[in-house]
Image (cartoon, rainbow, N blue to C red; front, side, top):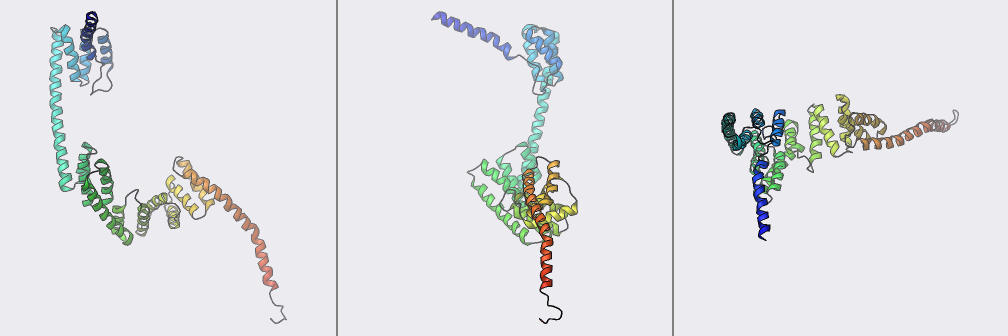
Amino acid sequence: MQAALHSRWSAIAAFSLVAPAAAFAHDGTCKNSTTPSEAAVAASKALKEDSGNLEARLKLADALLASNCFEDAVHVLEEGEATHGRNGQLQSQLREARSMMREQTYFEGLNRAEDAAKLSHNLHRCNKLADIEACDAALARQPGDPQVLLAKADALVRAKRPAEALTILRRVRELTPNDATVEQRIAAAETQRRAFLDTCQNATGESALQACQSALLPGNDDEFAIRKRTGILLQASNQPAAALDSYIAANLLQPGDRSIALAIITLSDNAGRRDALTLAARGTALLTLGRAIEALTPLKQALVLSPDLPEVKTRLAQAERLAKTEARKLAAAATAGPAVAGSTSTRRYSNAAPVNRSN
C-alpha cells in the first residue's frame, strides 16, 4: 500500500515539474496578431526543441514585440530568467517589454474610459431626447440590451414611426416575457399605427403617403393593402417608378389582383425597366389577366437574368401550360371564323324579302 502511494506521489511530483514548461509553451500567436510572423513561428519551433536556446527566445520575444504582443513577449522572457537570469540582453529586452506592456495597458484604459463616456452620452440622448441615432450607437455597444431597445422603441413612437417601434417591442417581449410595461407600449404603438392606417386608406396626397409609410409593418395582415394603397397614391402623385416598386411588392404578397396587374403592365411599359424582378412581375401580371402567351417572354427573360428568383420557374411552367390552351382556342376561333361569317351572311340574304314581294 505504501509503495503504491509512494509511486503515485512520485508521478504527481514529476508532472508538477514538467507542467509549467508545457503551460508556457508559445506558438508565436497572440490576441493582437491572428497570424504569427515567419520569424515567430521559426523561433517558437526552435525554443520548443530546446527551451534553453537563448537566441531563439530573444528572437521570439522580438517577433512578438513587433506584432504588439507585449504581454506575450514578457511571459516568454520571464520564462528565460530561470536559466539566463543574469544575461544583460534578456534583462534589457524584458524591461523594454514590460514598459511597452504598461503603456499599452494605460492607453487601453483610456480607450475604455472614452468608450464608456460615449456610451453614457448616447444612452442619455436616447432615453431623454429620443435621439434615434444615439439609440443605434448605444445598441452598437450593447446589442440586444432590452432597456436600450425599449428606449429606441419609445423614440420611434415619438418620431411617429410606430411600425418600426412594434418590431423592436416584439423582440423585447421575447427577451423579457414577464414585463407588463412592454405590453402597454405595444398597445400604445399599435393604436398610433392604426390611426396612421386610417389616414393612409382615406386621405390623399403627401400626408396619406407618409401615413402609409408609418403604418407599414412587414409581415402584418394588412401589409398587402398598405402596399397597394401606396402604389395608388404614388401613381396619382406622378411617381411612376416608386409606384411600380410598391405594386410589385404587393403582387409578391398576393398575386391575382387584376387592378395591380394592369398597373404593373402599364408602368413597366412606360418605365422600360428590364430588371429580373420587374420582368417576373410583368409576366405574373399577364398571367393574371389571362394573357399566357404574352407572359412567356418576360418570364423567360427574368429566369435568364436571375435563375434563383423565387416563383419564376413555377410561373413559367404555368404560363407554358396555359399558353398551349390559349393557342388552341385562338386556332379554333380562327378556323371557325369564316364559317360563322358565311353563315351569318347567308341568313341575312335569305331572310330578305324579294324585290317585288311585300313583307
